Length: 427
Image (tube, rainbow, N blue to C red):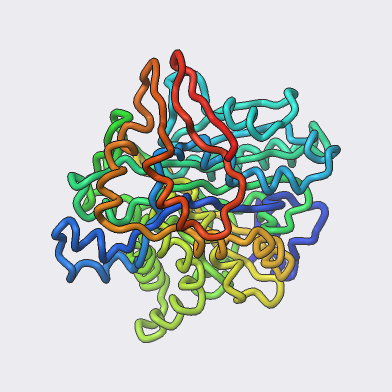
């Protein structure tokens, strides 16, 4: 493949290239609790024959002491704390991507910036485009860094969300996720060196899903499936118009996609391979080799919205599949809708950088809850984003669940609202 518009084309252009830009560090925080999808299906009386379509075994559940701010801070704090002071002070841009904003004016980034202890010479903003928002922020931030107007600068992009679904969501409820993924961006992209200039976009207006109020989501499942597959096809076509002689069936060592549930990714991969001439008998093996390693974490977390494609990237890098420089094709989709196909190079150093964050251990340490426990906390979670003047979050009812969290570490928790100002504390 030969890239135009300045994209890196060589398959051996490793992530250690100091002229590259991209993801320097990545961490995920997926809450304190989890429930099996089988328990949710049984509790809601859903058709168990459809469980296999999700290709999920668990989903993350937020406790009432968690919200989009705590998720963001708990994901980003290990990345920030690992930086020496002089590098921490080079973070000039902090962006949160969320469908779970807490105010129509004030960005939740201001809370995140405060509790991460970052310097005050930062641009702070919050972006919204459903599950595409983090990729939009990443590409915008990398463009700023690569422009050279502030040499050595870094950016912090955090995708953070909470689920506000109940039984009205039907089969979407077991697929909903909870948590955040933090990306530190700069000119030493140990995790993923982006192929600058190699991207493809496709966007249009549709109402496949939305969150019209802080209290609930709506979704048109059939329209969302069509839009996802449509955008995958056309964003890749736009990518191919910018990168000469690219072949999606052979030129990417791995594919990582937005993962609302793994079954949709499998359908998208199958359709894309068929459209580009892959022999039908090779498609399942190709999925197992190039795609399945990215689905391990999403299958036990659920849909992290704009963080889902980066949780999938973490899953791939933690899988042991990378034994040298590997080109990765990534597809990001957000309802409404906007999408992008882009690419980058990762290697063993990338895998080591992600492994150091201990994401698998965090996922394993979440407390397993019952369906009855889930129901008891559900109304509290549905009210998480409601604008109220005063609210106190009592942690006492949730202590039995917290006691089951293995290897508890200090985390930021949501304690309530005072005069519309959200309150937090470390515990």
